Length: 260
Image (cartoon, rainbow, N blue to C red):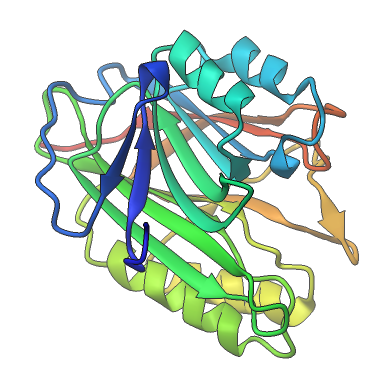
């Protein structure tokens, strides 16, 4: 049914699903950000293999304006969470198995005004990884917030596919004149990948969020999960220690820094 490369699936209350294609007309009724500060959660949810992962989402649902998930699967448990919390979830499935779609998912209370989906196949195993850009209005501001959610390619020799996936995303981000958040599981497990990641984000003036107590998931001694930003002030940043996934969720509070 879904043959278009750039489609996005949108889930709302009562498990309604909508197919969003490029250049679809989107109608937005309210801004996402209506206060000076707001909090985001970034979490590779490990395909919901561990039962208490939904409890973590429930616990932080009211506190967070944006929940950026990687390895999110459209299981009844996750869709029921979206319904209970009256959320909107935009999902870029990388693949489908037994009618369950898996990929990055951005969960909010508000519809985005623009949406862009990306997929890049793993060079060795040929299973895609996905990424999503959503853009939201800000209350009483001419600026808009761009949010990029990525699960980077993992199994590759060299960094050609890694660079290609990042370029697709960053080329769109650099066109945006306003605050930006880029976050997710970057699979930056080699020094070559890590160096490339920091170089690429610096070319579009993104800064990394640092954690005073850093308990991010690591592989080969390097963290996999990151949050980068520009046009915002960092307020607080912490990591939630949990066994609900093989990654720990990142919880970051930002302060608006807009000059209209």
